[in-house]
Length: 75
Image (cartoon, rainbow, N blue to C red):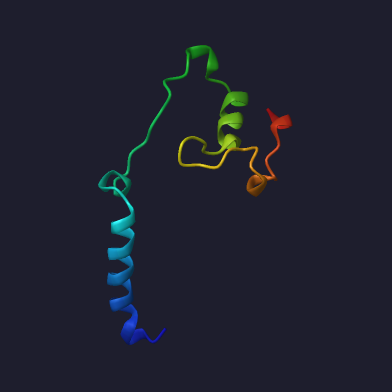
């Protein structure tokens, strides 16, 4: 794309994305299912959480063929 058209492209792209998303999708929010209990604060749990990856309503499940590299045996 010629540099002269880049700003127009950015504005059009932003407008299209905003039509597809809800206002809440454009804000940084973190959701949690709760705090860890004191006995859950240890290195093994930290590693498990680090490698667990995101999941939930807006993410593919770990069993999806798209995410076939996930292994539940590491849990």
